[in-house]
Image 1: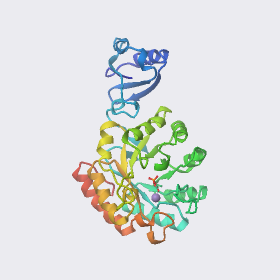
Image 2: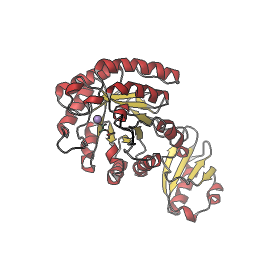
Image 3: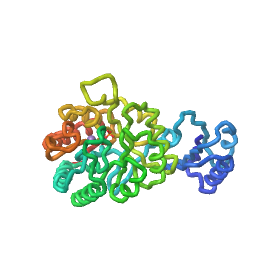
Image 4: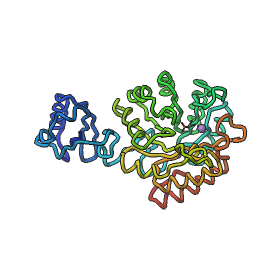
Length: 339
Ligand code: PEP
Ligand code: MN
């Protein structure tokens, strides 16, 4: 249930509504917008009458939210969520590019990657240190040593870090080294992990599961948000369909659909979406044209020798060229990409 306070309602009135909600058994989540405070109550929906709240001082309106996700619902924060990390804003007018190799492999590889990512104007370097590989015999990542290398390279080039957390036990390490914690497609419904991330105070990049519906993506975001962490970035990365021409089927329509349903920033990962580098630029351009708030792209200084996902990793020159194209497309849809 949602209580929208009147414009400028004083704190005493907001508190009175919060107290009433708590008394009735609701857990209260607060969203403070520029003009209105919105209170989201999660709890025993059957037992209350919205009129009880509508008559309270300072209340403008009160609604039951029938959708299964409440805090991720657009109505909780109609103005949209902008996640600020340092001077980077995700969900604002700038399209934020996050790029780098699939995995952190060694000092030299990650240094070259950070240099090229920063030179191209991307703001965030990606790189997995804990890798969810389909085969137990494939490279599994360098663990903490990889995180340390990634952080150091990012700091040398003024970049933020996004890296994957595969298990609850890894959260403290990721919080220490990474600015954004990535939940991979395979873990989108690892509910214990999601609950623990709800208690973390770092933004989470939540990737769509390979067979997840949009409602399931939003319910997974709700798990994180219901723990009090509202900084969730959603990521379309392709879903599994009957099509075999591409690694996954990049669902570009998920971008505007999610943006209708939620206030959370929505980004796209064209690399895992198609799995072949020749197709990645077209899907990256399409995602920006469709309104994505950011991109997650794999680029490697030497893709042919990458330890994971080489076939879908862009060559440095390809990435540079793509960034130039993205700037033109962003401008055409009223956005921008940093130089
Ligand atoms: C990745 O980003 O390298 C990754 C493993 O992605 P996904 O979870 O989308 O497969
Ligand atoms: Mn990858």
